[in-house]
Amino acid sequence: MYRGDVLNMKNKEYIQVMQKILQAMDEGVHVVDPDGNSVIYNRSMAQLEKMESQDVLKKPFAEVFKNIDESESTLMKAILHRKATLKKEQTYLNKDGKEITTVNTTIPMVVDGKLIAAIEIAKNITDIQKMSHTILELRKEIDCPEEAKEHRIKKYNFDNLYGKNERFSETIALAKKVAKSSASVLIYGETGTGKELIAQSIHFDSPRKHKPFLAQNCAALPANLLEGLLFGTTKGGFTGAVDRVGLFEQADGGTLLLDEINSMHYELQGKLLRVLQEDYIRTVGGTKDIPIDVRIIATINEPADELIETGKLRKDLYYRLNIVPINIPPLRERCDDILLLTNKFMEKHNEKYGKQMWMLSEQAKEKLLDYDYPGNVRELENIIMGAISMAEDNERVLMPEHLIINRRKSVARQGIYEIKEEGLDSYLERIEQEMIEHALVAEGGNISRAADRLKIKRQTLQHKIKKYKMNM
Image (cartoon, rainbow, N blue to C red; front, side, top):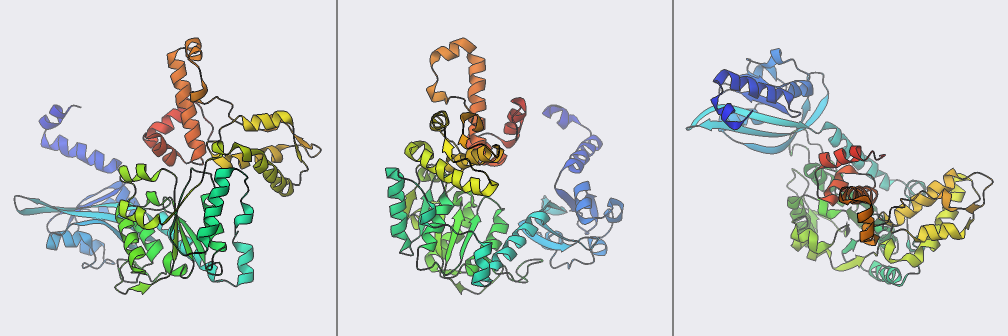
């Protein structure tokens, strides 16, 4: 249907089309007229609130939703005060008595100065909210007795970091030096280079080593939930809010690792900057300033100048965090460490799987050295772990056939004669497939992050994965 056809539709037909669209939406849609009577209540909203549309439509909102105070209802605020509410988190009980959490946007519709309706669009984040609460509860285990913590938290220190490469050795020397201070640290390294291992090593070699070390991946949660997770929430601060201590308070006196900080919402980065400048936090919905003493270690997996240029990282936050920059070289730039790391991983996984494979054949060494490891040290360990776990109990020498490695040559190594042999279309498809595979490996199989790395839409990447019959 073309735009001209839409404009020429009769009013009744137009309404039918709009109703079809509303019913197909994943988000809940609820519309009330100026008198507060529900006129649209789509299928997603009905499923969310466990209501039947016929029990809601053409009835007063206050009569149907008696458990929601009018003063807290964003729909009523839109009707009574013509007040818009954007992306507000709300927690309430549905008809079945189940607590649900939504992010709502409510807008009064005014035409020629006359209010004709109020529209509310609700996105269900109940499961995500539960996940964030679970994370906070698990973090409280940091307060358990020291002897119990030893069995719950895996700690890494500089003794767990192996390498003789000159650049890597310089990186570790700098990390050991900065461990003695409380300065903020920004660690840059590709996925799989060991950023968290270095962050933990800094903490456990510092004067704060007897205080908490907490880590949070900033890409794991939406901005509003991440804010509550970091700063805590105050009961009554917003609908359904409870008193909950955030990670900053839990980490007081210790270290907080903010992984992939460039994934944090731009506005939330500004709030974090204020905390770093003023050394106090304010809970979400709270009015009291809470002093904190927390060392921040942040990580990024893309060059800082690119992140700043694309608006993913605030320049002022970057300068505040980048007091001591630590850059971890990728494994392809420390090839002299590949066999050393391989031996360490063989020892580790021999013990784990009860195997006794202690030697590398010369052919296996060549195979390991002739690869660029887009997933870095993590990928190398996965390769060795797979080889050890699949080896027979009586095998003692790791052979090239034990090593499952993508043997495609990198595009940079291919010659023009290869293009002539297979043709341009096949060659370009091969390049595309290789780039997708490398992105998926580098991002640990996460399709969304791999799509971001490739600068394509998630749906496009899923289509290409299906096209090339890649195993996920």
